[in-house]
Image (cartoon, rainbow, N blue to C red; front, top):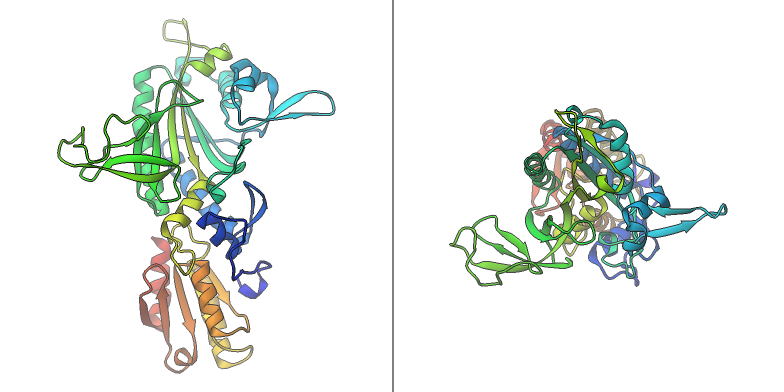
Length: 419
């Protein structure tokens, strides 16, 4: 894509009404546009990042047997009244139509997915089953904050699994846990698993996937030698105590943000809808339900909070909008520009996603914008490249500069985009 053709532009200054680093940088770089507090539109570059995150999540959910659907956003009020959520969930957006019917905007999907599963799960032979979607959620937050990490409208992957036994659910939870950790690692985050209260969703203990960041909303304690980690709200131990799991490490306190969770919903929602299935003896049984959430837009914001530096965004290769930022230092029609044009065509033909800065602006401005945009690799085409066919390649994350011959450039870029 030629940068001169992108309708959005970068901004030199952060918006005055944004406090969170993720919102400041994403707005400045032209990835998102703020509509109002807690509500953002995703512009071309932002949409590409979000799509890459969603595709990773989709691949991992499919790999463990999840079946993707797209559930309704506009929910009948009757479903929420049947579960008690209509009056029990304080962040639920409620809508009254001109026909005087009441609706809810989906803030979670238990009230929709349970009747769907009820229609098709009639026998123990139909279990277990895992159903998920990637879509928009709406919550009437009193105070939206932290940019795209805590909004009134946001992206979410929710999956629900239905089981015959508690043991079967717990086995599947371990599968999902491993899948989540793999998902976050592919996206470029090191995430810890904590125990926490189930809150409004469940009276049972839940598990949260927490990324360490100063912009987080929770305090956790974790062991530096093993995997033990707990939310401070439910932890028996405090910072400095010996780890109760390994007995060797000392617990450290940190600020973190939740990027995923799992709830044991038990039989609450099936009972609300009188959802039963026939067991092996032909008797009616109520399935056990697990809920698995992963915030896609929150994950995008967390990556910014965790990885960005003083120059701007720093995207991991797996989620970046482009693999390469090709920067031409020439003017339209000169040899530098022609060399950059040819290289861009060759990279694209080789399957490398390229953002090509073909604009007629100063080199310093191009480099500053390149740093702000955060694309993993920058290839600079200047006089030296024309004369020697050797190109300067800059690693955005480390700042390392390499001189790469033209003959090795395509192979180098293809290798990086394949990882």
